[in-house]
Length: 124
Image (cartoon, rainbow, N blue to C red; front, side, top):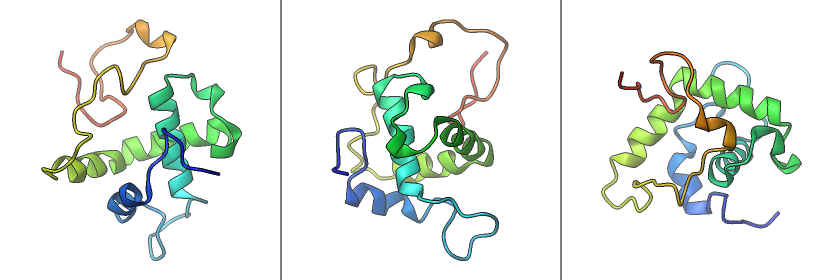
């Protein structure tokens, strides 16, 4: 499998690898391949496709979604973004609609204030 535009390069992976659960010595169950999982999350976020359209090389869409949600609720993504955001040389700090697109179901907003998946509280 070659690196494509949705996947992390080797230097990018080295920067976040130590921040992720599932390393030797961590408590609990170890994920099969954290890099493949993160690349699957990036594919969904960057392509704007629905999670059910996730290519099979990243694993079953439902498994990826469950792990993504678990990492959201346990603060993993928050730690990763805080670490990357602290680096002044980070070229990818600014996000706009040319980098991340929402799928068509994201146009509606139901419910009240809550914690977003990326760990940032919504402002009410």
